[in-house]
Image 1 (spheres, protein in one colour):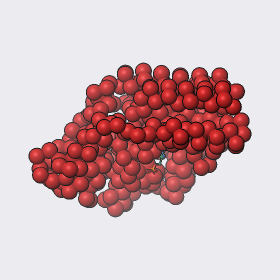
Image 2 (tube, helix red, strand yellow):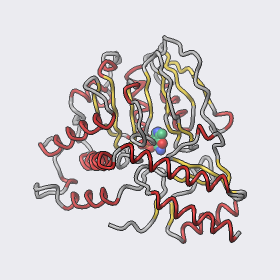
Image 3 (cartoon, rainbow, N blue to C red):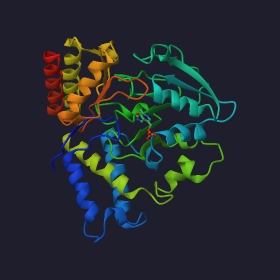
Length: 358
Ligand code: PMP
């Protein structure tokens, strides 16, 4: 299957051609069921197999054991912004949040509906163009510390997370499975699927079993992690096709191997940052190399006219999705796992051609 365009959108994002082909086949007929994946019952044996295989693959890829539960929930990333404080924070309790970007700040705002929020570091004053300094002291009374490992809009990413003395919760929506990573350090991990893991609306949640005993709030089952674990993510009519596409992505990740994925991601980021840093027309948004994301690469042009001209040239060359987020402007090139090194080379060649002709 040939994609007509190079798609650098931040999410929904490009999916590997093989995954698209498998998804297309399943839309016509799922295995030997005689029906489409879009018609597959959520309580039948086929979907149970999809759930079980995907859970096993998540555990294998994360190298985590049976002390974790794996869930596929609906409502994307923002539903997790809500469920985390609903489950783990009560009036009078305090949770720590690191304010490293737009999504981190939104998660924090959602938290404030349920308890006290302590900001444990922020780079908001400089429009999130670097990572906040890691907190020197984390109070033991915090119910959890929430971090965002990759800040999709500004293009910053943690390369390491220090050990912490309170439950650690991470939004890994835009960098899960992009590199070797110690997932065992976390008490709850979540990721909206539409970047490295499939299609929108689905969220992967990996929760340590002992976190479930901390849920004291009285919640409707859909919003309660314990109830979702009990029902194996099939509490209501599950997003069967969405979870299936995530399973296809997990199989693709396993086949390629995280080490190879990481090597390609390093290579793509290096090629693109080098081109930006050598350019006289473009400037990187994040200057500190240690804070730069390998998933979302943000930069600006020297003026609006140059920005529009380059976007137009990209569109003429079938390269799409590199406008920056509506809150920042400029460019953002999202080079998630599915983006091939060759696509980044094509973009860089065009940047050089543009610069020569300007
Ligand atoms: N967290 C991060 C890091 C994101 O990049 C996004 C969306 N781009 C979200 C959360 C929100 O996800 P959703 O739109 O699925 O609510």
